[in-house]
Structure formats: C-alpha cells, structure tokens
Image: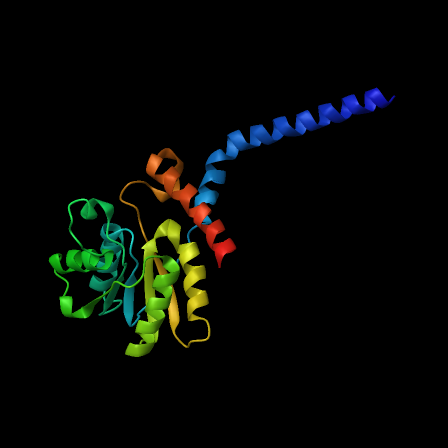
Length: 209
C-alpha cells in the first residue's frame, strides 16, 4: 500500500514537471520578455530643469539626451561618469565618460555652454550623490535621469534613495540599445550579458546598500 502511494506521488510530480515544461515551451517568449521588462522603469516624457546622462554608454545615452533636448523637454544637460574607458586608457588618453558624452553632444550641434560634465563618480550610487549635490547647489527642482533601458529599475531605486528628503523631483528615461532589441534580448549575446549582469548588480546593491 505504501509502495503504491509513493509510486502515485512520483507519477504526480513527474506529470506536474512535464506540464510546467510544456507551458514553458509554449510561453517561453512571454516569460523571457517579462524577465527583461522587470528591469525597465521609465516615466513619461516631462519638462524638466536638466537631463542627467549617466556614464557607461556615452553613445546610446547621449543620443537619447539629444532626442529629448531637440524635442524641447529641457534646455540643460548634465553628463556624469568619472571612469576612463579601458580602450582609451590603453592609448593613454585621459578622457572621462562625462567628457566623452559632452564632446559627442557638442559635435552633434548642442551648445556646450548648456552641458555640464561631472567627473567625480565611478558608480551609480556615487553618481546619485554627485547629482544631488549639483542640483542643490544650482537650484534645480526637477530632472530627468537617462540610462540604458535595462538599467532604469536599479537606477530608479538608487536615485530615489539619494534624493529622499529633498524637494527635487526625478524622472527616468531609458536609452534603447544599439546592439540588441530589448523586447528580444535573449536572441543576442549582448542582450544576454546585459540582463545577466543587471540582475547580478541588483543583488549586489541589495546586499551592499
């Protein structure tokens, strides 16, 4: 009797596993899309005092800043990033990420006098602290923070914590990747690496901060 019960239990568990595998096979695209979508936290476009372009991907994030600037959502841009890209370090060229982003925007026709470059931060947390200080010192009340789409969820948590207790409003916009489609991230090596790394960073920030 006991053996029969154990046998039935094994069959039940095996059946549940088979059903789950079938469902995963049928709905795998929706599941994978949701995994990526959880990393995106964007706000609608809004008129703000400044666009804050975070370091890490000057080209993509710079393009998004230019789009918003050209559409008239802000007249000022703040570029952050105190890291020197390794490819530039290899040829002994000391350009910070913030300087690279600003240089790109100026070359694309944006007025340099309306773009600030902050080079004192090397992580998202440090960027949030540096931006809080800049906004406070310059009387900014509303900003839009721009990062890569899959970074926005973590960036939002970090910046919201940094701006907590201030009267400064923060919006978030994601720059689309030039290497992969966020809606089909699993079909690209770059997309797979990005999503994997971002979930690891979420865990790191959860433990560290």
